[in-house]
Length: 334
Ligand SMILES: O=C(O)CCC(=O)C(=O)O
Image (cartoon, rainbow, N blue to C red; front, side):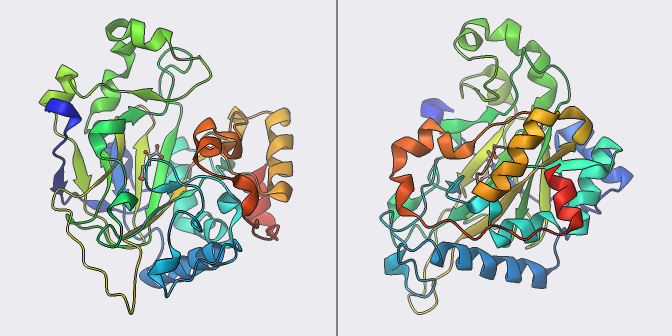
């Protein structure tokens, strides 16, 4: 993989029912699993509509029917070329709709054998068409293959992340890529990468894998096929990122432009891992519409990410309205 190039294989893996033993077995052995139909195709389409409502209500002039309004001057701040992590997206109607789907919770409840769960206030991967503007391309996988768990301060299984795709994946477009079985490399990272780790604060749950790592070289990443409404779950110790497809070629119809990829980041962890101080922050985050990372056991304000603050002016966006949550949703806040 010279120069950080990666060649993910586009694969069809079993799409397994939420909460099934097969799904848990796949997650444990491979470090990831595709859950079938977390949302129905109709619900996925509805969630795309809600996502556009969010984008159009930012007050910057984004219009879903006019691709000339999708430029960076109007689009919410995005990182890695494709992820919108802040500007109220974590409390958009789209995100609350998706994370309230029963199958989403069933999948996480089975992972933890616990149905008292807290949900992340994560953002979404929104990929604009690269034939219209090549600079909209998401970062190539080799640039940011990572795990989302500190290898020293958080030993063992701590978190399982999720991405519900609202659009069907294809080899052309790309999506989330994972390195099968790489969660099993985690325990050796402090030994193999002591110097690299020394530079990472213990509270920072992000570790980038160098692409010349011999284990990575020997294990090609995969991009799993997913139907609209499917959810990928992956262990935070699994090496992953997103990447354009190996055959990235798309053609946009200017009369009916579409996003290439719309995926909701969603993560649930047992409430027992959190604490009253974090929960107080989470309750107030709903009112102030602050987004978070995947972790719900620790308070991490995604609107304050240095990467977000350096990418644009956060004050120019109108926030979505304060979500009116039902009892089940309030339980997911804590
Ligand atoms: O699916 C994606 O766009 C990448 C998500 C990811 O790498 C993450 O949430 O850590």
